[in-house]
Image 1 (spheres, rainbow, N blue to C red):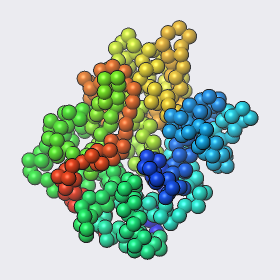
Image 2: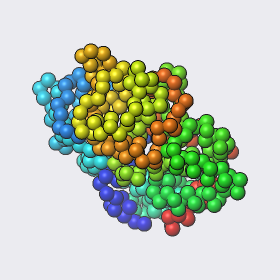
Image 3: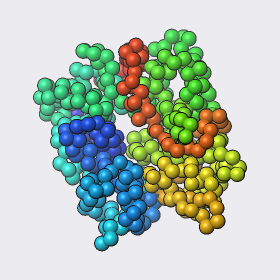
Image 4: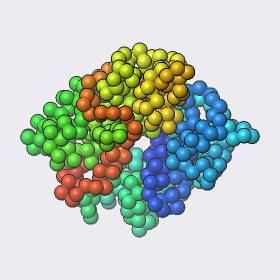
Length: 426
């Protein structure tokens, strides 16, 4: 399997740069070891915040606010990242600090992430993190095979490769289960590709009782799109759900309001019927929009702006027209506003109006919400009282959960990975 890195498409490579950049930014000291990954990931995140479907000019106050929302220090980091994007000719900067940005889709943004990464002259180890992620998204790999593949492709000594794998595991570029010769490397994208055959392997590895539970849960999710974590726990039991979500077989999305955080379960491949599983929505923007719109369909009252006709609303947004006014727009779409998906403004009379800035994200949400694949109108009833104020995507939910897993649950997760090990044919 030599040449994994070179064979990757620019979009695929960029998606891993975004993923790894987020992991490096969230781990103390990781940026010093993987500087090209961190800075390219941050620059791509900033570009995603800035860019919509159409070319636009962002006033300096909005530039600073979007940077802060992306976790970028406006004083220390922003000037460097802006200069990187200016060199890529995707933005221009005025004398007052206003930014003009070209129109981009999310897929195009991750392609720029790849170019930003290469422009930083990444080390062999940094390139190896991309190949490692790609390999382990296809099937879990045993440690000795992984070590040999990375060492051969990137001409890294055996000792350095062992250290590289340990560091990659600690930062979260890759996940691992087991120990010694039985250790397996994998990542949370296992079930986004070739989903049916991988699910079958997992189900075949379970007891007949657990098989029946998984089939029941899958039947419900296939029919209505998503269910609450509590309902999934009732069907599978805590231990089986922990085992499967840690391995990535189910996505756990979290939305938040003043009352707390609430989770709902979807299948990883659900969104990717409509887009490339690795590239088109590397920033989880479509998932966040679907979560916000589903919240508006199921939890808002008529007085504050309950969504009654989702197809009409999204068609209007996707055509570039404003929607509103409604009180809910100013309360339930803050996350999308901070991620540069929507522009929310105070209406002249009461409430707020919103305009969609990223139409590719709106089109994905329309496809998802009107085909029953995920987040159906009735699926989140009773989950979220109050206003939606936050969203945590599946990868962060899965990663945070894995870090908190107790040893017995980790061992059960390894059973799933062993069932998938032969999938890739290594």
